[in-house]
Image 1 (cartoon, rainbow, N blue to C red):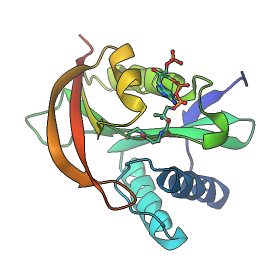
Image 2: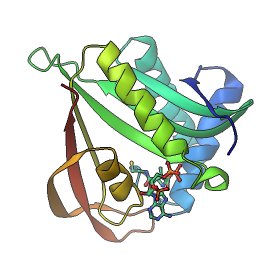
Image 3: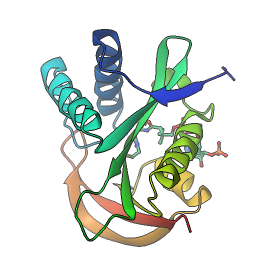
Length: 172
Ligand SMILES: CC(C)(COP(=O)(O)OP(=O)(O)OC[C@H]1O[C@@H](n2cnc3c(N)ncnc32)[C@H](O)[C@@H]1OP(=O)(O)O)[C@@H](O)C(=O)NCCC(=O)NCCS
């Protein structure tokens, strides 16, 4: 297993391109991460540029798992901004590059996101994922509880309706 380093992704052009390529590749391989296949570079760039801007505002952290300079995976910790939920954060856009899957990258990213959430005083995590995603067993292994499943919640990247499972975890 490569010695992965987990750190926030910067908004340098090189790192934005790696985020874009990772998102495009994830969608092309069937990952349900809000986008349809084929995902154009421009659309991926618009998404990550907005997300990195939100990170600059302190609303989220985009973590990367790096193998040297190469981005192997990413996850975002989104700090809920509503005044009545200062204890809550959401996990989104967990993706591991196809080349690096099955090497513990997503597990490392999720553990780092939990640590970061605690550092921000966020003790309640929420996330959702397509019911047929490999991530379901990962989240259960990490102690997330199923809140429920909604049928026909979203289209997969190839246009078929899929159900989505919502998960939560208390860090207290
Ligand atoms: C889900 C995903 C992030 C897992 O990434 P990964 O780095 O390969 O995951 P890890 O190596 O840390 O594996 C952790 C656990 O995930 C589950 N898992 C990973 N790959 C799996 C597979 N092909 N089949 C079944 N379970 C799998 C297993 O429970 C695994 O634990 P184990 O190794 O003890 O069996 C990756 O497959 C991916 O990017 N998928 C597309 C995007 C997506 O669905 N994201 C999540 C929803 S937002």
